[in-house]
Image (cartoon, rainbow, N blue to C red; front, side, top):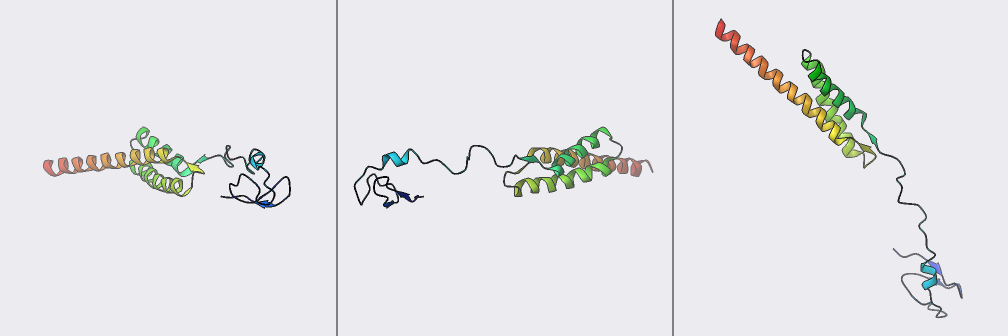
Length: 131
């Protein structure tokens, strides 16, 4: 990207990477050292925040394993919030973070749903065999 500058000796507009002014022949290397960026790009303009849905997914996933007797009331919200939080992180362009948090919440919710399904299958088999 070329910036338009002026020669310090004659004021002729100079573009590109020219080392000498085409009008007067003055050396332009002194202009190069004075160029500073207009915006400081080393600091982020807005700090990144964790997705609230990802945090909710993690909380629901952990609480599902702590309160093992209420599997569907917390496992299903953990999975739903995890998927929505993961999508928010992908669409956030670096402003929204928390992809790992959302994935852990989803994994805890899915694992609890699978174990609940297996427990129901075993219970069903035991009831069929004993009757």
